[in-house]
Amino acid sequence: MTAAAGALLVKMVIAAFSGMGAATVCHPLDVIRVQMQTEGNTYSGVSDAAAGIYKKDGVKDGLYAGVSAAYLRQWLYGSCRIGIYAYLLENAQNANVDAGLDKNAISLPSKMLMGLTSGGIGSFVGTPSELALVRMSNDKKLPAERRRNYQGVGNCIARIAKEEGLPALFTGAPATVLRACLLSACAMGITSEVKLRLSGTGLFGDDGKMWGGVPLLFVATLVSSFCANVVANPFDVVKSRMQNMVVEKDGTSQYSSMIDCFLQTAGNEGVLKLWSGFVPAFLKLAPYTVISLTLTDKITKIVTGKEAL
Image 1 (cartoon, rainbow, N blue to C red):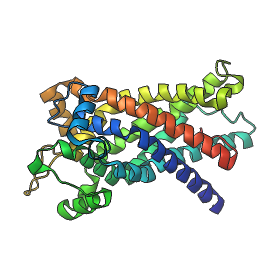
Image 2: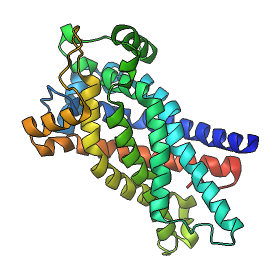
Image 3: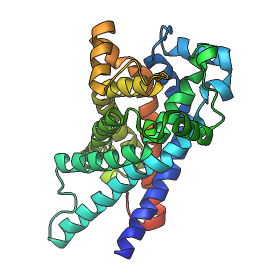
């Protein structure tokens, strides 16, 4: 039991550091995504949003607003999503070996269920950091009199708990968890499946080892990122809107539930609005997934001698 817990902890720590590396590169796209998905968006596209945010608030307070929350998110959400998945996948492979089967004889639905499980656990644990990330990323877009002016992720979480109550830290949790379950099921499960199937084609060298296996991982994660984004984007829009909404002093707010937010968004702005921010979300998710999973796989190989995916 102790050895198993230690193995899981190592995988989660590796995943957290890998996620931080990816977040450092990809955070500006997250800021753009959030600002394009929330109300009051007047940007015509990704480049217009990037230019507008940079012109208005610069790099530190604009494109990298809320990066501290992004790092915290990697330790709460990213560590679970990737670390627990790698742990479950390794256990399933070991069980196959013990049973005299091919260690990779694991079905795609099984892999996606592992990803769904790890993503669900991680997203629930990480909801407060996700909330802080959305609030801090979008704060500069609000009118001056409605800005919250958080002084960092700690200040943001503490103020939300104090001013809105502890339950407010889990605002949008249903949408956050559903999004993460779907996204993680696709991103993790499909990555493993595509990697396994392409490794035997010879297109990426002997057993996919060409150039250290990086090209193979790149293609696998790119495919999985697109699939994950198609499925998860509507929940991303709902999550961003619910986490950014202002709760009045009498407790009223624009949306009463996740379903209400879905219906209002689709009814007032059209169904396609649920896929707003798809391009920046994909442009962020794809490199984030590529970087985080590649780093996780390679660091795990160095530390444990085994592949993570």
